[in-house]
Image 1 (cartoon, helix red, strand yellow):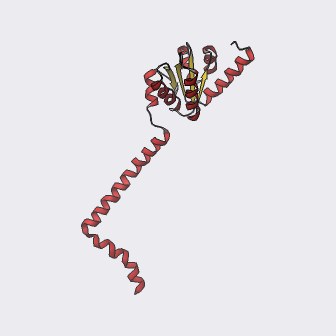
Image 2: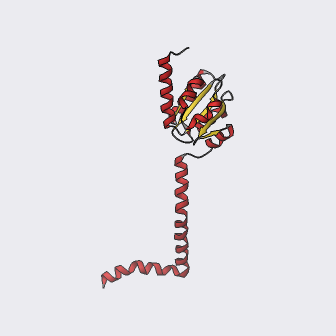
Image 3: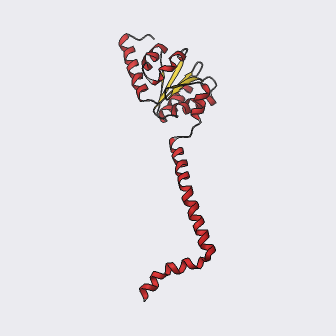
Length: 178
């Protein structure tokens, strides 16, 4: 199906706005994938905040011109699906997870942070934990020294004579009775 000039300009402006907001672009070849599998992929992508688009490569090249994704313009050949995500790892995770179960989806590359990614780079990006998991790990690391210190102090107090802590807690009650 051929697009007229105004439709092409609309596609370019839509993709340009996607690229402006996105942190990551992942490209994959979708040759041979069934409609049902493609629908499943799109549904999974939508639920993870990833926008998947099947575009003409010339339109995609024009749309990413001047953006950090321009560096992968030379890789835009063949039947590709483009995944854009605002989350740094979401697009890579969705495409890589789907490629594990469907051998017809072949990851071709991508871009993140102004740098081109090869297939291994996309897979490594997909293996990074989500933002929530990373924050939970960071919080655990921050709490670890405090909880260790509390345990050491509790053990020290118990070693010196655990009975001393109880009278200190009872001291205000005795002071009130007197």
